[in-house]
Length: 334
Image (cartoon, rainbow, N blue to C red; front, side):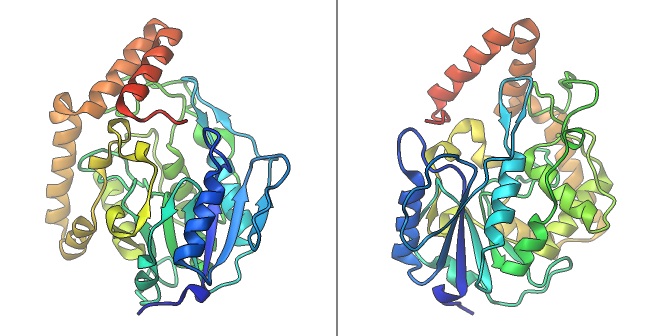
């Protein structure tokens, strides 16, 4: 089934400008061109005089603060949650697409991917998501890492997914300070227990009665691995990012973002067909091999170890090295 753009709300979420460029205005123009009858909502935490985007409903909430990581990176998870909740409150159409302001719509492909009534366990219908950055844990051992770059489905289901409230500091920070054990660690030197994507999904799962949590970002167990696979195939539909006619910023495809580690649509279909305990056990064995044996040949792990070593020597040295690495690899944010 293909819905019409008149049935769709496009919720643009994120900053208004980046590197002096009006990225929100650019994204709005792309939506108008390819989804001409969609309701457009722009939800941001950027303070100041609101821009004049005719025909766009504008919501700004600058009351939410970010968390600071010991490595100098900000964690904007509560800003993300606030912009989503505020924007979804204004949504008037049956279907909704969550789109970052740094993405560009290049066609109407997503309309053909909604309205098929695919049953879900936790939602009315499965929620569609981009493969960027839904990590395949057999390549990068992040469980419950549901991508937030692009999501679409029934508005009521997106409201349920995001209606989790702001996250308290104790839910996000490691109690004993940064975890410096390099074995099985892929995130480097950080004071956070969870990545934003993990924190959002786990908070949602817990609010829906599921006893799921992670002691740290890269933690895995067979029970949690199995639970994540089940939740993923029963509630979400992964679509390869390059087939959606929606273009992400170039930095998302650079090495530090590890785009090669995402789960593909074909891999999710394979999970649906191979859910027997023995098949899950074989996949988990592959995860363990990549996490503990073949990690020596994985760039992500080597960069993580370098981060731990540099920060243990000098935080200034580590910060300069990280900035240089991001510039050289194209991951630098303007």
